[in-house]
Image (cartoon, rainbow, N blue to C red):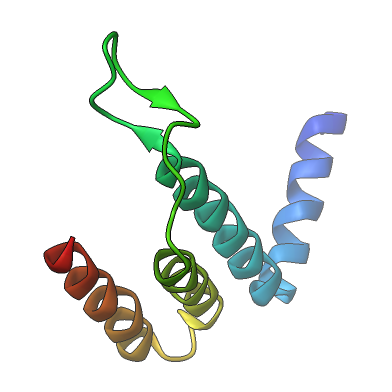
Length: 95
């Protein structure tokens, strides 16, 4: 086995033993993407422009709650779906 394959196998074993670590990393990555996207204006003169908008406090709170709920997606999948889908949909309708 090559060094890369050995490292990959070790990482897979560790992630299977610690599934919350993967879910936490996923939640963090989703939160970073949502926050970065909230600063973008999709209707710039030459495509998207960043830094021209800032998210409201309510939007930031919804992003944090939605991303944080992803940590529990293996234990309570329907509750996570309700937490991530419901408030986000209501917020989009109100803006």
